[in-house]
Length: 102
Image 1 (cartoon, rainbow, N blue to C red):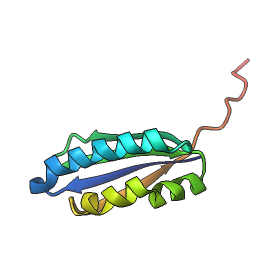
Image 2: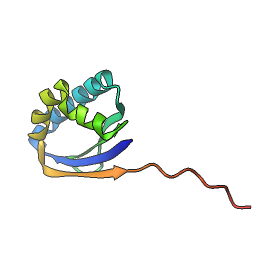
Image 3: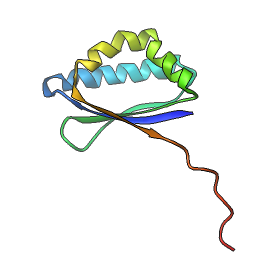
Image 4: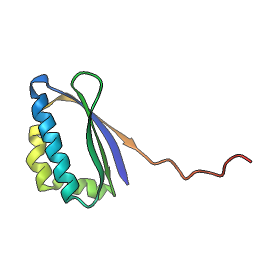
């Protein structure tokens, strides 16, 4: 499994376009990608801050997402909305719980 939280800051004049594109990309991704486990955008509490939580069955499924026709059609316009601030934090599941204390 490959899961990450990507955070970004959006140009003020592009915020409404970004929101529209985020909804469109989410809808297309969830409808067309069987290897996608989760895909959702969030508004951060700082001005113009956004995040997307993405989870895929594998790194290959994430690569297929980036190569998909819907991603290719939307990504360039989305990238033009970002002010250059972008980071990814990879998330790993916790290991199985050990037996509790005696």
